[in-house]
Length: 39
Image 1 (tube, one colour):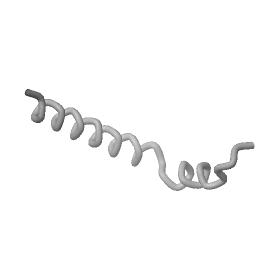
Image 2 (spheres, rainbow, N blue to C red):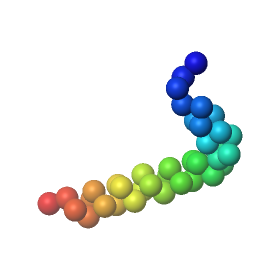
Image 3 (cartoon, rainbow, N blue to C red):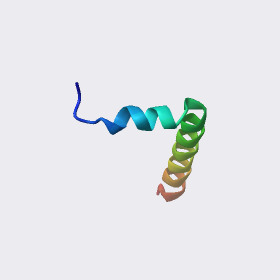
Image 4 (tube, rainbow, N blue to C red):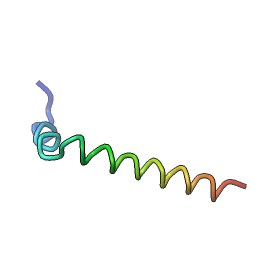
C-alpha cells in the first residue's frame, strides 16, 4: 500500500468531469503562453 492515504480521497472528491475541463484549460493556457512567449 502506498504512503499517500489522501490520494484516494482527492480523486474521490474531484470527479473526472471536473478534473478534465481544468486540465484542458491548463494545457490550453500553457500552449497559448508558449506560443506567445516563443521568439
